[in-house]
Amino acid sequence: MKTIKVSVVTPDGPVYESDVEMVSTKAKSGELGILPGHIPLVAPLAISAVRLKKDGKTEYIAVSGGFLEVRPDQVTVLAQSAEAATDIDVERALRAKERAEQRMRDHHAEHMDFRRAELALQRAINRLAVSEKKL
Image (cartoon, rainbow, N blue to C red; front, top):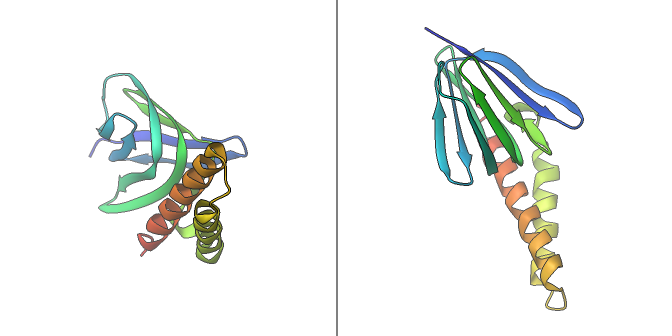
């Protein structure tokens, strides 16, 4: 089966590099499925999971937004942060979720603080959802 090279990179360095059969992810404009030979594309990513089909299995990487660049033979994900499902610290993600929920309940918070808390909550929920897929 044909494959496409995938790199997931953060400011701290590479998180994932491999040849896969298919990449699925959520761009801000909707779901994307990428196979080898896909037309060139650049798209902003939502806080979501990148799903990578390889050898009949699916691997998951939690990304906190970023950009996806597609070329016919390579996919690059540039994310502010990214974690493979197997690397997610579930306890830490649960604590981050609880902190974000508490900040959102705080009635004295200004609009920007609420939005930051909302984004932190989305990131924590995404990490927890991806961690459950690591089986």
